[in-house]
Image 1 (cartoon, rainbow, N blue to C red):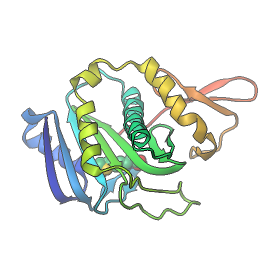
Image 2 (image 1 turned 30 degrees about the vertical axis):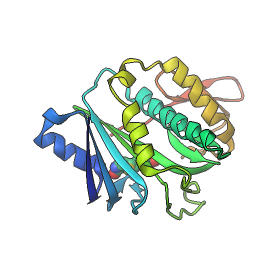
Image 3 (image 1 turned 45 degrees about the horizontal axis):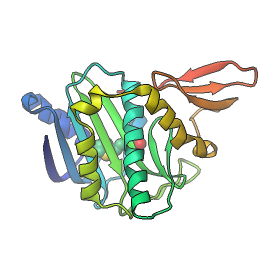
Image 4 (image 1 turned 120 degrees about the vertical axis):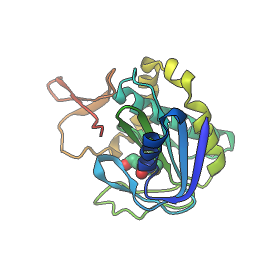
Length: 226
Ligand code: BTN
């Protein structure tokens, strides 16, 4: 698998798309940037891009996978990689997931995932490792960074885990359960944009968030993809 590196780029996500336009035969590949000048977040937001953090996009040709499942599956994969490493080094920090796939450390956001699908799948991953943006808690959730984990180690752990086998063996029932294990302790930090009545009870087989109201009716919130 090719891993390309650039010191500085607007967004690895957009750069990956321009590489595909010129040389589609090199798919699958990863592109990493040391700094992002105009990083993209979910729902048209910007993603902080200072040096020292992980900014990486993987491009794959798979089309036989539901975007909602992929988005959740990548979140669970990252949460497992990070939580296992923290346990191994004796760090008691707790990894959490906020729907659909924000990576939290002790309830604060330290990473995000941007899935874009056209003729190819683009998996954009940003993890704050040495620094993080100041976010007004009134506007968004508080941010943090994960200084206990080395950037090169994390990059290789991710790249080595997301391969053909990952797509082939994806068992969404197991992933659904694991997602809820990572998410259940963060329920008080969850904030969906619009107010809702009821209780979050999990995700369905498409990765939609399930909310049960006081009468027992269950509604599903879907993710948005570009
Ligand atoms: C989010 O809003 O939570 C998703 C953030 C995704 C950021 C990553 S960093 C690498 C890739 N390139 C981008 O421009 N965005 C994604």
